[in-house]
Image (cartoon, rainbow, N blue to C red; front, side, top):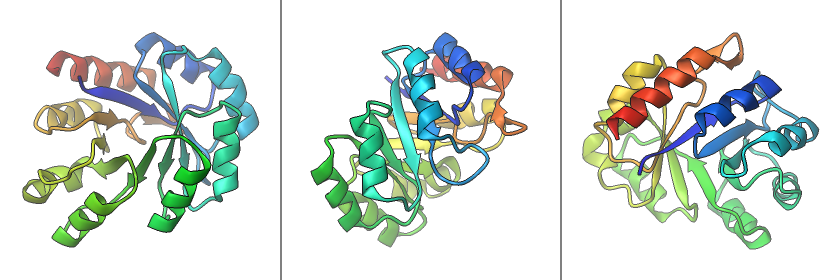
Length: 196
């Protein structure tokens, strides 16, 4: 069954929305940008999140110790690497923590496909554009795919039904002035669930 991830959780209003929608994953951004959240605030928000929703910490070129401290504290369940982290970094992180790792990749060439399939990560994160425009390559990805959306929620949901992926990720698609738009989140999740 197709999984759903809503990213950019940073307020109690977001937690209330996510608890109502009940996606499979909630994403917390720990790298610089408008969606960034501190470990302290995340720990309070996670406390109020439904226990069946797994939390994913999103990082960009941060230290392994920062990531493992959030895992050890029970703030996050999984890790998403969004930067230029090397395979050596992924391997080191897997030795230090027993957590599933998602790695963002670009998929435009057969060389990209080789890097993805040889990676030590457990899952890959690809944009809907890369995945759909390069379907002759993407059909050969051997790892479960989180498909990241951009743009309008309903058109993203329509694209998802054409793709064979593990999960969909709202990424920054649900933004409204730097926050999750409840209307867009509800519309996207309803459309995706009706297509399953």
